[in-house]
Image (cartoon, rainbow, N blue to C red; front, side):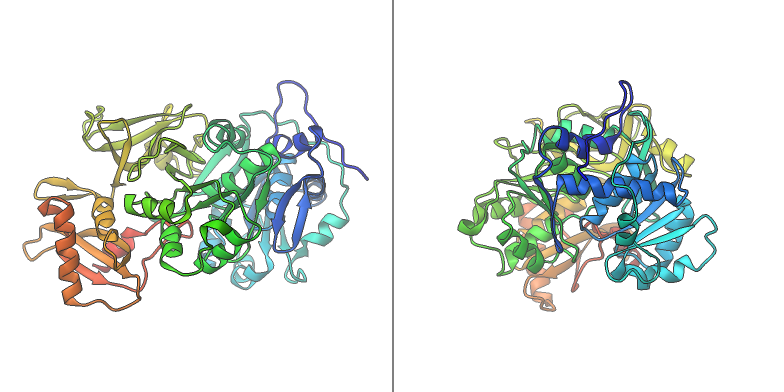
Length: 520
């Protein structure tokens, strides 16, 4: 049976039709949509799979606007389920695949999900949770493997109709949720609308990336992450390009393999990964890469790291900042206008402002709290009215980041608002100190937090990961302190340096400094 593209009457809108059926209507049905560990899937095949899943939800008596929780590794099953749910007017809630059982217990309770869709390798962690008291959870669907522990997804798709009439949603209908990464504590469910996915393509994927049908896109950031969802689903599907999906964890070795083959043209990573690729030996030679553009987000990119990546690969690296609440990048460097060490400028279509402690905007050069306004902002945090009122301020969204605007109009990251230090009466950006440490040859990663001295005054303390995995020494610690003093004002250097094998991070690569503060 040939799947025919669907449409909705004027005035209605469904994001899944825009990302799937439009490719069929425009003659791209036989183009490769997804390359994953199992093989290749065309747009026609993916659309049929999404249709079958939408029909399966109806057969399972899942109603419009009920939630389904996705604990899915990156494969063709993710867009099958995510977009199939949206076609049916059901709300997919994509969550981190690297969490503990207690975290999934919270997410099932908080979301009120009626269905859990989980990858087979993750069942061991999550099955004990499903046996607990979650009365709203009616079905467990298993992706991959033999399907033991629930309904096998492939069996469900096989017995469902490949043709589906989408629910008549509108642009302002709730479409999906993403949970914040929890870099400062308990995750919050950010509620997004039907229009938001394609708005990120309209503002960033098209104008900034210039994504086109012949692009092959590889994102080390996973699909459950807002950054990865845009990179590896919205942007390629919006133009009929190919997304490369990798189920395994994004290590330097696994990423280097995928950069060599199937030779992506666009690559998306986080600063930690770029640093590790440069420090290792597996990164393909420049002549063996097909990359035309790379992007970094998740944490600010140190200038030295961006410069070294471009020198090593010959490929520009665009640093930007986005958030779960804003869905994708809203401040960005752009091709031909890269200023390493900054987050670039507001993406056209977004507005940004810096607000001081009095609530007024700060002067250029001063540090302030970053607020952003644009058409992709989440409408609220689910079941968290107080936090919603603190974050979503009319047209503005409070990001929780500190920035300053330099003399040339570039936005310079200064750290998370709750990470900022006040030393000798002056603000110190942890990121600025970390960047200075990382410019030293021996340093792979660094994180800086506040620590009280004997007089109970706060000074910077650094946790440092070395490239050679050594334990460090007092002599090297003194060298690093001197190195920072030579780059920054005297009051900013770390008074203590602790060498550690790794830094605590969220699954999206953000350093969890609150855990380091707790360690002291």
